[in-house]
Length: 307
Image (cartoon, rainbow, N blue to C red; front, side, top):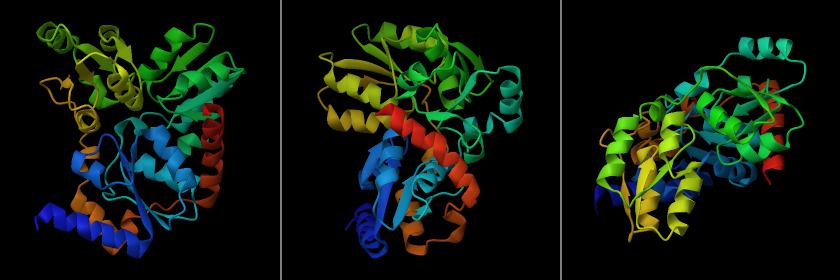
């Protein structure tokens, strides 16, 4: 028995012992996706977390995702395989910025990307993901939208909703922000038949180079449904695993500079096994009850409006 097979077997046994379920984001390594019960983008995993009936949720992702799972299902034990796996974007907005905008604009909706911490969600009117942001913001009665913390996703929405007045801060995803126009153009020149698919966390000039811009799940669905056989993928490399698994007859090209979220890659099968086996307090998501309640309202509103 190989070491990988042995670890998988251990994880399956531990899941039964703990009455646990494993959720994994598309950006973690493929071997971790393989051992998960549910794999998806932030919106899908939020839906799953809200309805999980197991005692323990192991979230193979970064810190804000574990917080979301705990907020949506506070009675469950939520475990993070790596307690240090973080999201730099989540640190790029402050309560003071929100207070200043609310003071300046009387009729403003604070729309917060789920890539944020609970303390920011608690001060928001509604949360969104890249999958549902357009639908939700379009339905809001407010003209003024303070979209935080990702100004790239916010700018992408603003172009499609000119009737709204968007206000931004300086938040962004460092991983997507590394993509350069020259790299994309070179890849398109090398593969002229390929369709370019980008995530809206990319900068505007990158999105303009793409044939389709959408969420991680949107990119996967587009590639699977398209009759095209070649695609240029402009997002985190973890998405290559489901794409190649589900469409082995198609070719997917990434940039020479690997677009990697280093925090997501901290999650390994060994860490999933260890956190299930040991359940250390340092890896358990623990939050103040009032904070969870305050942050729950905008998350519930997201799930309701996105239906």
